[in-house]
Image (cartoon, rainbow, N blue to C red; front, side):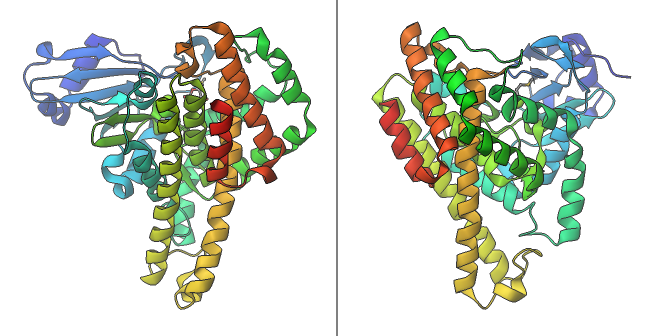
Amino acid sequence: PYRTLDPAGIRAFLAAQPALATRLGGQPDAWRVREVSDGNLNNVFLIDGPAGGVCFKQSLPHVRVDPDWKMPLDRTAFEAAYLRAVRPHVGNLTTELLHFDPDLFVLVVESLNGHVVLRHGLMQGGDWPKAAAAIGRFVARATFHTSPLALKFEASSALLAPFARNHTLTRITVDLVLTDPYHAHPRNHWLSPELDPIVANLRADPAVRRRVGQMQARFLTCQQALLHGDLHTGSVMVADQDSRVIDGEFALPGPIGFDCGLFVGNLLMHLFATPTPEGRTRALRDITQFWTHFRQDFTTLWTNAVAHSHSGDAYAAPLFRDDPTSLQQVQTQFLDAIEADTIAFAALEIIRRLTGYAHVADFDVIADRTARAARQEAALRLAQDLLAHPEHTSTVAALSARAADRAA
Ligand code: SR1
Ligand code: MG
């Protein structure tokens, strides 16, 4: 039966799994068990033995940071299923699943050495010039290979169907990301009263309301591929030459631009929060790198699949194999639509992180309260404009240029 494991329980649990005990080596008493819980939902521990380390993650029957908010346990099961689905396509751009226990809702994955959470690293002024490109590659591979562009419809529907039942965490996204920030809700909060009029204006804007409604529908009805579902900069670990996407518990079938938009939205928040011009240059470079690599890799995977006749039932190879011009046209159309979604979901992510339930730490480093509010206001104004006037910003390049102006 389920129980939340403490460090002694974790030691006993790992000792009872021969493959994990061997990986750690030595005697369980000598293993070092450290809690590193950082996200809002789960307990996470790193365990080190003389031969190696593992990362242990367990669902709690409530939100970790709010014990009164009760929650079913199944989220680590979805994370395990996500890792099984995408790891064959993305390899070391994510972590290796070592063990899943369906009674205790415990997930064990390889432990990463010398990595830091990208959000924390960026806040400390660190630079990982290859990370954003790697995450672009990750999203391209994870989404292309789980979509009907790559799979026969029987296979894509069998793969996606179980994730459509990730109701608990999809409900969190529907409420916290796509709905609550746009009306008065007790979970919403923001730090500075200076933001009150901005929030009031945003909520009163009918053009924003229409675009938010459209993106809600897109999120819920456009099941293009298997998504990570929570791809912010806290879901990425980086080291010098290695970048990994972690925390796939929000996985669901959805529009590919949702994953892209969350990542871009978090880089944009870093752009607005970072205090130095160098930091801003790096944030803009990362947005460009991410998007360029995503778009290039997705297109190449698609072109190769059609050329070698191992593509799926959407834009089927028999129609497009011998007509590269039409293939190129439909690819441009498909990726332009993802780009529009990316921009809108990035705006939604900024708004919810500044005015909703779950905030991000990036702005906390700005000690001066007035300066912090001004930067948050600038980010919110941009996000409002992106939603109200999508026709003014139709590419990620244009988005970067506008954000650069406003963040300077
Ligand atoms: C109650 S969960 C709040 C947020 O934390 C997760 O990382 C997701 O971003 C979610 O929206
Ligand atoms: Mg998380």
